[in-house]
Image (tube, rainbow, N blue to C red; front, side, top):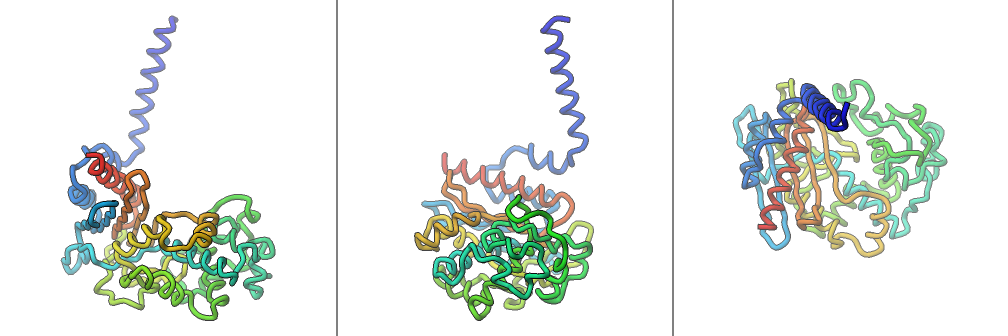
Length: 348
């Protein structure tokens, strides 16, 4: 057999393998990925609603341009209220950015040290969390503690704990997933514990600190720490694939993801975090050593993506009030397409 024949056989085998692999890829994702890129963000939002998203809000802040707002689908499906860009939204784990900023500021002010151990900071839990004498504040922030993730508890979302103390009980006395700093593993428990550390250090709720030191200086008047602080009518409804009821009434009060905000507020915060106007030089150095500058969020009924794109100097925030099924994969595809559209406008 000649080299030419071998290459031809290999090429055919590759094509067959590629076609076969498509049999296992959901076609809704393939379709969303291969469709021609629209000319405008609003067109892409409309296409996303056609992909079975219930509702969607997008905020774009590109340097040199006025902020842009987009919305599509339903704010409230049952009552036929269209989505609107000024709605409040459960931003879920994007909340961790605000917790990490608070931590950096308190470390800079010498109220905390990144090398403090969990046993030192929360001594009453020292015997109930494995490796508490090795887990530092730094490792908690960075998701390198090895402490089990309470949201992985079977049935967690069907019967939410009534408070943070009850939530923590789900993982106390459980074996560690790994030795501290051995690897990275995302755990909401880390931020539940950080919230408790912040409260004890401050002597009052870290929610008050975030409002005074982060929200007020940036004039973020539509960002809240808890669902109980807002009118439910202003909160975008949340839906999960295969489940008909509105999920916005579920009250997730954990510091790992309790915050509520408008898309613009998240965008303004993210811009300030990335351009250095939120933190002073020393605080920024501390923050850079411990956490990221972008985040996603996921709660039943809600998914969110908030990122700064340096190459096009743009902050893009996307809220989708649908979860479950392939909705998360689809939201990532849609988000990336929106960023491409924004980038193409810059270069045109």
